[in-house]
Length: 477
Ligand code: SF4
Ligand code: SF4
Image (cartoon, rainbow, N blue to C red):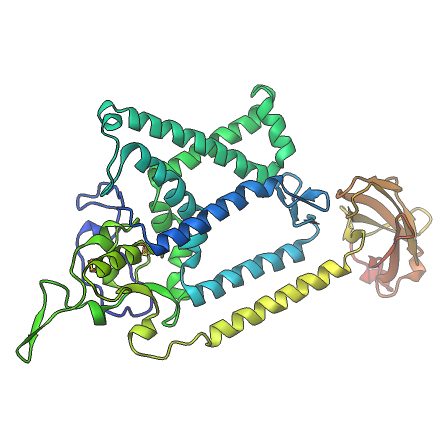
């Protein structure tokens, strides 16, 4: 069916030349192949459903929860302030945000190396909402393959109407929950209770988000995983032969029914009865018996489907199971290998760095930047002046006032004393002045002193630029 990963599958996929070999959601003539997977309830389905409902509850509740008086998670893009579990990252925290992102990436790499696409099958919002919210709604009103549905709902077309109405309501609720992560529940509540004409921008954002959710979960569906999600495309580099994946055991299953071979006068027959249920239940429309494929989101539905068949024909369960390519090939399949050692080490280093950076953060942070215009100017009295910018982030949850002083130079600024709101970041102009004779080879090292409340003192070293010793070496202002 689709592109196999870079690792050699346990059994080579048969060559396909039809349109389906390019994309499992295409018919031979290039039109969309609508996949209506048959539901296979089983032990893995029950477990996934439990996890999915827990995740949906967590996702819905998080914007309403508080820690240290702040939202548990708030991604305020407008002010570029991100709150996670009571700690707010300000726009000046680029190092922390970079470390956090690296930590997330390495954690994803580690999970994939160990457990394959466990994220896709068990926790990705795309899978969770599609398989446990939208498809159940569809089955409720329209039935589905292998499921009886209410005949009169189908005959009158009412089932279809109700399905779409429910889709719109659910998508609207989902879009509001999603936006609460970015604007907070208080702002969202205001937007919801007031007229859209008072907040046309937010209303438009809401309408677009709802429409995108509807498009994704009701039309685009599995194609998000197959063609749009970059994570699926990275599988060939993230997985290895010892990663845990959903896999069909060809040693046990082959030759499948109808393809038995005569060996030493006896018919050799594998356990696979070629019922096709593992294909009929697959939400991405592939055949797991063709080996590891990029389209497989590890949803475990083929495991449940096949287990039901094996139980019926009284064969051991697990013809399709969690396993690794190495295990199927009879090789050693342990957890330890270079990548499963390197990733945790990197994650531990990143977590340590994050803890150290947060622990060293005071109630304010200061950065000194060069001001606009020439590096220095010569004042009428011969002194040298440097324009600078002081970027101050008030990390406290209360308003704070800051004053500016300097050691080794004079400082002048109309912006100080500066009063900053809680969490505010301000970039304030100032001018440093020093005698021309104090410069050595065009440089003068000074210290800027920012004084805050409750005895807060922050000292920042700064190098002023000035004329070189010899007039001919002076940089052009
Ligand atoms: S569900 Fe099991 S028995 Fe049926 S075709 Fe798939 S692998 Fe073979
Ligand atoms: S092959 Fe199996 S695990 Fe993979 S997506 Fe299809 S049903 Fe899910």
